[in-house]
Length: 167
Image (cartoon, rainbow, N blue to C red):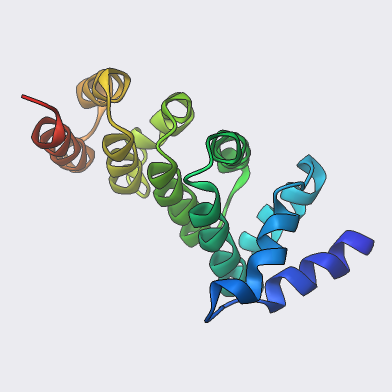
């Protein structure tokens, strides 16, 4: 129950206006264990707490993005949470933020969503944003199995990959 009150304190800091206002909160989030992340994903997955949790989540992604150890750790937490996330807005946000983190190891966990009509667009752009040969491979594989609507999203992601790849 102690963590629940700490989580309430964390979520109360968002939305934030000045990064200094939340610096200690972001630093505290760096040391969260799996149980604390699970509680956080539960908050993100609830409509009543989604908005505050999404502010905290995006702030932490931006905090972690330029720190390799934190980035890898956060990407692993997100990919672990993805399958159990039920709220569509939460799953979309997780996919979008994974793209920003750019961790190649996340692509395999994201790839099942390429065939899901609800999440294909977000998953496609997430993988394309991560980029690289692994991204291209998974997008091309999904293109062969995808329905017409999903193929449009995957094709757009492949186009984006081709555009941003060095010539």
